[in-house]
Length: 200
Image (cartoon, rainbow, N blue to C red; front, top):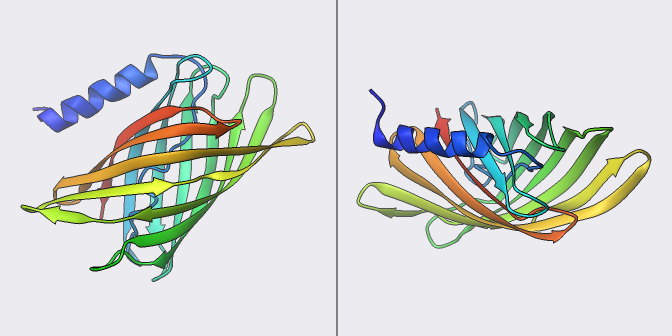
């Protein structure tokens, strides 16, 4: 039997997967720190809203390395110009999200995208701020990030940047849902992403 949250997640993913053009990976669960020795596994659907509509889906595995650092592996596919993508990131939890202060961190990310004619490597830094709020056993964790960096292809590069605003939601043990809106700033796309992640 499919529960209502799973059904909604499935519909969103199908809607995203049915559109073809370019799409880019979102911040997703990067701000939520995974404790050392624990992991998270998530599925993220993406929908771009500029340069024609586009869609993609990514699987992201995050491993808690130590009290300061997480590592994530990313593998995905998309329709249109941005097809296969693979890469990863290292996340530094500089100031933890504790009572009385928001969490502040920095992600460093490398992603390879297969474009129709060539490949493109994107190297970005992702500074972010987030805060968890708890009410009646539920958690809401809004975040704000400014990914910026460079895209390299055919011996040339261009600066890329965008602004990401999103939130994670937890209503059941081990699972978090995400919703994120990205605003294009320089050589990027405006997008909406959403997904679900299992934390253990």
